[in-house]
Image 1 (cartoon, helix red, strand yellow):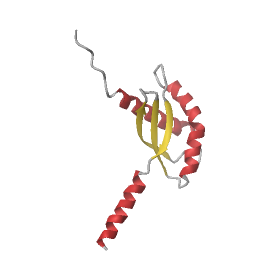
Image 2 (cartoon, one colour; image 1 turned 90 degrees about the vertical axis):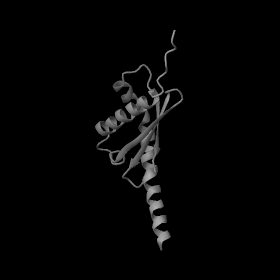
Image 3 (cartoon, helix red, strand yellow; image 1 turned 180 degrees about the vertical axis):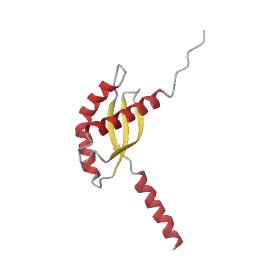
Image 4 (cartoon, one colour; image 1 turned 30 degrees about the horizontal axis):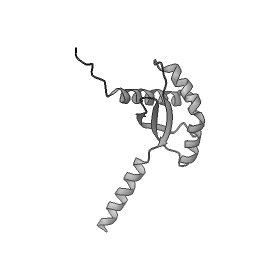
Length: 117
């Protein structure tokens, strides 16, 4: 009897699905919110046997601390809406984390440009 191979991409698929659904929830429910309307989800990673999904976000708003606090405050409501939209027995916990890749890339570009001088 052949042992069934586990699908190692399941965590990635769940994280991607959660990212897409949470982006839709933010678009549908928080379009009028000044802090959350400029949030873009740029990535997702699952942890803890699919129990947790970390969502990486970028915001056009310069006050990232205020955006992070607003996301943290609305996480419970977003997760409740996520449960209604997901077709799964369990809904993972979600956590938002700011993605500063663009700022780091700009800083590296500045450093490289200054090397020429």
